[in-house]
Image 1 (spheres, rainbow, N blue to C red):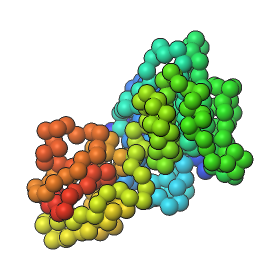
Image 2: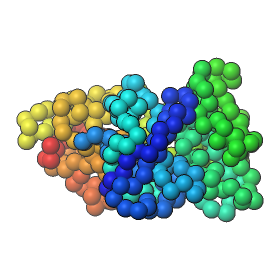
Image 3: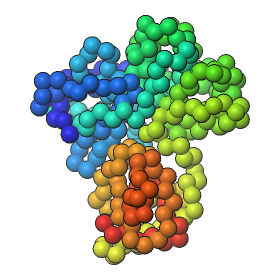
Image 4: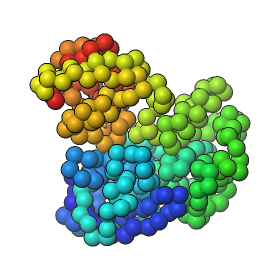
Length: 307
Ligand code: FES
């Protein structure tokens, strides 16, 4: 992890603030690539993953954080308690949502704060002779976050506000993007909506922001039981909750960050039972003995050794 301090905080509208960090333990940050992420250690045991979206030439790291009042407190802490000069820790950048270079045309679908990795793409494509389409969806009543910056980078941006434009017609929009390299980032619901429309159209694979879980809210899978022999707890994971949720509610001390099976923070050892793996970070070898409870589930009953 790199020791950093908050250099500047900027209100971007729509409940989003940009936090600019400068290094404390080195003269400059490692370079980043478009779509890269970093893990921010918000407080002890609380890690969160964010896109890096500073403009080229700015040697600071910028993380855009939307206040989520219903979240587990990471965004609330940053919005309510973080001040200029405060010290935090950031991981080295992770290039897990890369931009395919040299395509003749790109289409970007961004929902709310999902615009942040797209900003880094737009900066990377500045001055290149490619066609860029940006469909940017904001919540009803929200100011358009980053509006000036987005319009400067992509004057042809199509902005959709559900209060003005009604339900998004992803299929109709995707018809105009056939043949483009298509990237999508936003909430799980937003990403699922775009993906469903792409599937219905038979659109070639779209690239989805990987820290957004593709699992639909509501039904995450069959209920199962988690046995923690070390602490003598037996927990029931219902169909609409993740195992990580249930562990945290039980007071289990477990690290987590991306909540999407990407960052490896929440890995636990499994000594018995069948695992339904949904992560994007474990090797086949690892999958025999460990799992990521943020997205993966058990079948029937599983026994965890490490908690
Ligand atoms: S929290 Fe990142 S893999 Fe589980």
